[in-house]
Amino acid sequence: MLDWLLPALGALGVLGLGALCAPMTFALRCRREGLPDFWEWGARLSFFWGGLGLGLRWGPKGLRIAPVLLGQFLPYPYLPLRTQAKRRRRARRRAKREAAPKVSEWNLRAFVRLLIKPSLRLLASLPRIIRLKKLRAQGRLGFADPAQTGRVYGYLQAVAACKGKVQINVSPDFVRAGAFGRLDLVAHLHLGLLILLLGRFGWQVAYRLLAARFRTPN
Image (cartoon, rainbow, N blue to C red; front, side, top):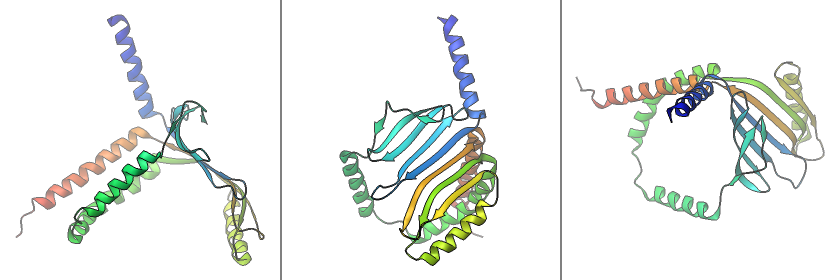
């Protein structure tokens, strides 16, 4: 039995280490072609540079979870979300929260003050965790005020002039108000570093909470 158990455990350990060290890929895509169509959204989170993972899709068929292989959603299998039963449970939880006693404003302010410094350190570390690989926007954009449409289009043209990872090809629509087209975003996340930084954040928050709790007045 050990002849195959030890190699299997070793392979799982290598896969787990690779998942922690290799960058994860986060991809977001939204699309709207025309009226009365609404936006279709898709978010993917994949290990091993986008090779294998899971994603959320929201469109005419509702919200569902689907597997991701090589950066693409697989049609099957998928798990639908937001059923009627879940909506009823969510409504009951909301009613319980509204009926629960409110936290005092002083305690809330004190807790927020304790979180400020660790949160700022975590935000300052985000550029080391998340790196933008691609941001592409294609389509048409219009507002009810044609002058506002022209101003926003001018701002977008200024951003589009900066060549690099950001590609913007959006034309103004002076006839119809709304946004139509497609938006693609791809970013790499380093899971191992994220876990370490979240652990540091949790330790700092716990230390500050304990220090505030056991602080004795002079």
